[in-house]
Image 1 (cartoon, rainbow over the protein chains, first blue to last red):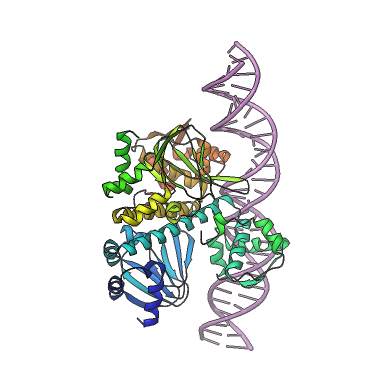
Image 2 (cartoon, each protein chain N blue to C red):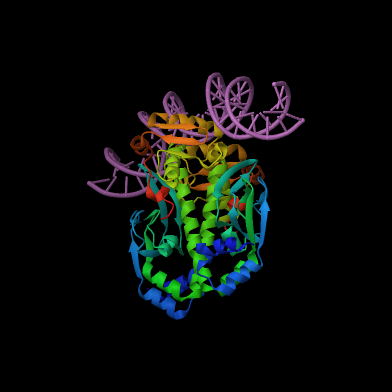
Length: 232
Length: 232
DNA sequence: AAAATCAATTGATATATGTCAACCCGTCAG
DNA sequence: CTGACGGGTTGACATATATCAATTGATTTT
């Protein structure tokens, strides 16, 4: 692993405070691999052998049941996924596939658990990370249960806009079919939802979105920090 | 606080392994109170001043947005809630109200965070607890996104049946209107869903449910451990 | 360039779910 | 006893969302 990657991983909240020895030892056991797009990295139900870190590219976390599939989240550099399964030594609840060519570090789960037992700072960082993950899913759950698909899209656009810097025009960072799945609707319905937001000043061309009437859209979307803020 | 309660709380996974001194110190700062039914204990958005422990009774965790309300979970003795907010020192994402007369212990959040910093066993227990909570919400999310309301009800009944000991007949432990909210549907729709399960051998009288054709119902519900098992 | 592919869109239609109003039936207070 | 209340149910209807089939448009392959 190049030094720059090593340092980038070290900077993650999860690893920043742990003892040098322990971090080095974790990394010594790690594999780093380049994967092409559309490779299934893990399959739900399997034992959690590795903690994964996305170094570059992006990864889709999804789940299936009875022939249906839904996208649960997208992981972008640099962050980890499958932490809860690793810590609990329990089966993966979600599958993961690369969305594009991606570079992934794999840390054996038993190493993570061993260092977790030995390094208190690491253990604390894991608590913070898990609490963050937990709260994110709760927010997503509220989004799903309290809003219609049109409202979910409107709020997603506002979040994405802010994430992109706040300008009136920005790019979707999803393929639309996957955005639909993340938002809990069909691609057809997403197309119609975009049209449904036209009266509020939303226009779309390809992946480029432009919000022409910020106030109108916000009045409709009613964004709420307890659902839409990433940080809290 | 009576000794028996003290010991029951001590037995919780969250507190079982921590040092005696630290547990005692946590409990010394705790308030224990009896609340009548339908009291709002906490309101989403407020700072998380206390970690709550339900000693007896039951508590509904719910959220609201734009005049709508949805039930997120029910907490039954003996367990804690609002752990993630306490640890992150972040606002509550959910509100909580008593469903019946309930006895609740309140531990000041800053005490929890202080002991969390001082007691490694406690910190580890928190990790396990949070990982568990996180995985529960993920399962619930999968349930919501991958299943229709009829399928959610069918699987809920199977879970509840197992929880009640596995016999063909058992009691719902929810008021139906709240069950509807937990399952993400309206009370009217729940009524119809129960009827929709009659062909699979489900009959309901009041809160008593009887599953007359286990195999048929399971064939329809297709329960899956990665969604429906509590433990994993 | 022609053909093949695939995401995105559109229209027609079906299904799922929500809403509203009415009613039933227990419980409880007067 | 009686009337008010509240949860649950039912029917009629409205809306939201999914499904299916066809088309478009862009991109890649041959």
